[in-house]
Image (tube, rainbow, N blue to C red; front, top):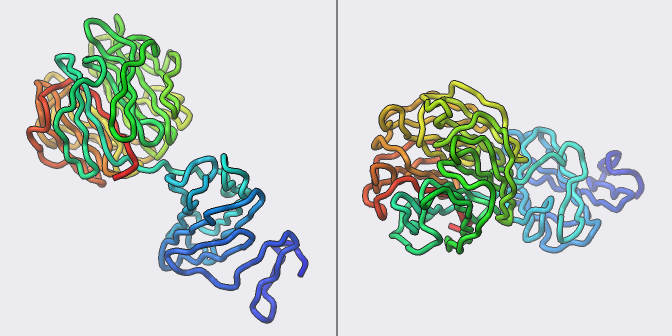
Length: 417
């Protein structure tokens, strides 16, 4: 048969005609929660009753094409999820989550090569960004007394015993996840400020020191951004500084970027929205606690100050939770406080929620379990943790989780539970 795809119509037999390009349209409406598709075909996906996971072929050749159509205009209610079945999708491996959730959407994909894999053709789908696989485990490391130790956190939030001898002992450093399943500790102080990092593998093994990575400083913070990268920001040299260092998805730290919001130290940071991040709170150059935040774009660009975001404080901690939101917790005003502030998936910081565990400061926090978070440790050398569920609710204290200490750092790592 002849004709172009958009003009193909049902024959009286109910079979849909083949396009001039050779694309065959299935005469079966897919309504199930799963479906396996083949190259060279177009499919009608009806998600009126449920979400549908579409499994792509496990092998493909350059030019292979598949088209998926929202049959009932219900993808906005029940989305489709693409399982790329071992092949890349838009250059990302199949551990990434690819979802389409717009009513009336069509997905027209063509296989390119092993590097980029399946690529969308249509304007209404090429803006879709795969979502990084969620972090399952976490690691707390280093801390007051300039100790060299870490504590791993399981995917169920259980903190393990101390592991000692993991890089130069130091305090007031920062940490973040990168590369989707690894982490990095950076900077801090030993006798004076240091400029060094330690990479963490996807099984929680901390590597030896890497030196000379940006301006030596302490009391900074760090977070992941942009699906698989990280950013260190702010801190104290001989005074407060306003600078950042981006970290690539292979753990390489870039040179300083200066002039990114009000210079301050002792703040927190976390990812939100799937690929963005937020810095908030801290202690400014006038020796005053501040209530401000700076949003970080998916490309690592730090925005201008946003003021008035909850109680001004320093020494707080932050982590992502719920897949696309963030939480800031605890800290110090004139004294230690017990409060949190939730951050929406659009970067809006909410008002204070008070009375959530023991008041403390100089603690740390990380994501774990795919959509949860954990706060742990703190001054004065406390050994306790508080788990945060996928809705942002903080649980009661869990005591005695490794060596008591504060001024440590934490990050999520591993996509395997």
